[in-house]
Length: 331
Image (tube, rainbow, N blue to C red):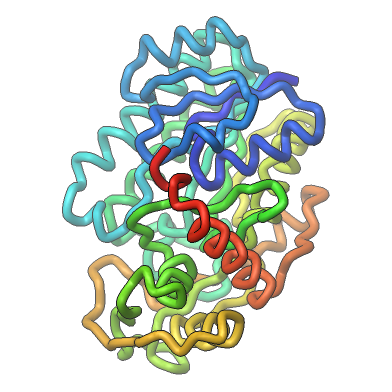
């Protein structure tokens, strides 16, 4: 089976490509390398291009002729989306619409979409099921929900089958595969606390301690990149076998607060890095925890790295590797 990954030079896309290769799939990557890296492409066929450029997408699909597309190319920073909403709607929505149109023209039957728990906004009930109301509170979440709606409408009148994966917080790395997050200016909490432990960031700022949670800080469901990657493959298998489209939450069903993450990171790194208290950021829900029952019951997905210390330990090994090889952040 041939699979094209948009954004396949980025953190999540590159690891999914790595697993697909191990399982014998033929992989191609379409990426503009804005947030990806050449070294993450490995030996995969590569098309340099931007999803906002329809002709570039169509040319890649016409040449590679994939059976399925896994779509990872998106801007993902919540705070940035509140300051630059046009950027998010142009890339995440218009770019995705270009990709879907090109997929239909190229007779691609299966489409896996990288969505987010941000579509839920501030949920009324936690853990969150796929049937929970979607009411995003930031442009990032809105842009992802718009694409979900587009996929649903188009799939009703076409042969395309989709699998939508609503990610919770992705973390961890695979030091043996030499793959992990490699961002010069990371916004993800676990990456930032580990950079603080390495002295790359002067301190960690906690954005608000007055949320309605046990310790007043935001709570998130963290999933290891290895388990997340396998979820994509299992969802693709499901929509192929059942010949139907479906939406899945991808998380573990357990949350950790900002303060808890900092505590575990200090334990793993053995570094008592500085922590400061700041104001709330716009667009941050107090608590996001997945109900993963649907993914567990309908697919063969089985989490194998469901441990916050494992997640942080693997991420720490990767950050130490990056620290010794800083050139990896440059290309």
